[in-house]
Length: 419
Ligand SMILES: Nc1nc2c(ncn2[C@@H]2O[C@H](COP(=O)(O)OP(=O)(O)OP(=O)(O)O)[C@@H](O)[C@H]2O)c(=O)[nH]1
Ligand SMILES: [Mg+2]
Image 1 (cartoon, rainbow, N blue to C red):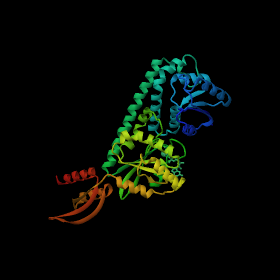
Image 2: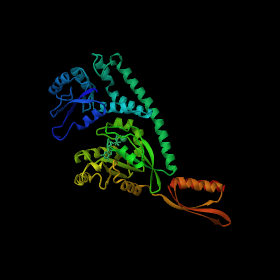
Image 3: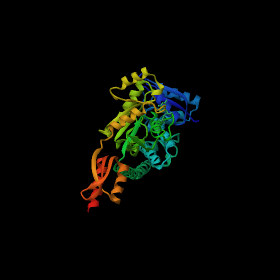
Image 4: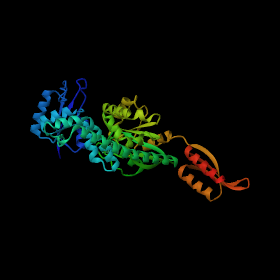
């Protein structure tokens, strides 16, 4: 297993800050964490941490021989150059680490394109400086760039970005069309959203009895999976999505746009929260989720599901609820692992599902009329059917609950019948 040394600069006012999340990210990326270093003092621009600290870390690097040194902060090309010159090993930042995880998990073409796009957008502002610096001497992290002209390298990146964006746009359009067709067919859409590792995929499995991959690591899910769930006789499509993480730069959110679109276009969002963590962490993560969601989802109802309740006692749960009450006033308590609270969650979903319209329609008692009726059984809730006569004609009276779009389709099918 490759080894890593982790470094975090902590604001003097933020004594409670830890390296926990960076450590979790490093483990999820497959690194053995050899040493963790923090610094509270004012940084030196050239090294991100103070110059003295940078040299102190060099000592540790010589001793522990890691494969990489990972900084929690965003590093500039110059800082990466200076630090990797000093340590003689590759130096990366938190975002690069997240990209490594994404790259190792990306299985589908869409996921690979999203990851490559995020990488290129991350790399582009550094491109010129990296080429210039690489020409001064080869070193870890800059290998091979010395042969480039800065202009050419930058424009190659820009060209590739444009190509990937065009391909992802096609994917997005196809997904939008699928969503439209699903709505027309009477499905409501519910998306599972939340911080990475909160238990979204486990909840998906518990609700639909399927097995999407769920693991104790960050970013297990990279592309959305959709499954059918019945709630109060209504067909709901439940979608599992990519997890959020603190300080995810805007470019990464953009690169994963087609994945996030499943959340932005849903009828209901279930925001899954890991309730077993300390209250302070829960609040921080919930704020991150809200920041990622709020601007985009507008009036879509959000159900906050406090998951992993099996891991904590009642008192702890109360403390957590109190801490988040300004962010999530009436959460649902669940355990995706034991199944506790899932019926409450389904009731909450049912309460927020878009209202359907009740209509009595009259169908001709013909082959086409029967075919419309069987279609209605698929896309709506048929509450009553009576076979009788309307005037002289045999007919079928149907009492049905359906979305407006389904009723519109029904009327146009009936109109076609009449003409
Ligand atoms: N004790 C307990 N563990 C749970 C529960 N729900 C999920 N877990 C565990 O939490 C870990 C993460 O679960 P996932 O379902 O993969 O989480 P996720 O939100 O889909 O994570 P990403 O796809 O990485 O964003 C796994 O080890 C699950 O077994 C729960 O209700 N109770
Ligand atoms: Mg998942």
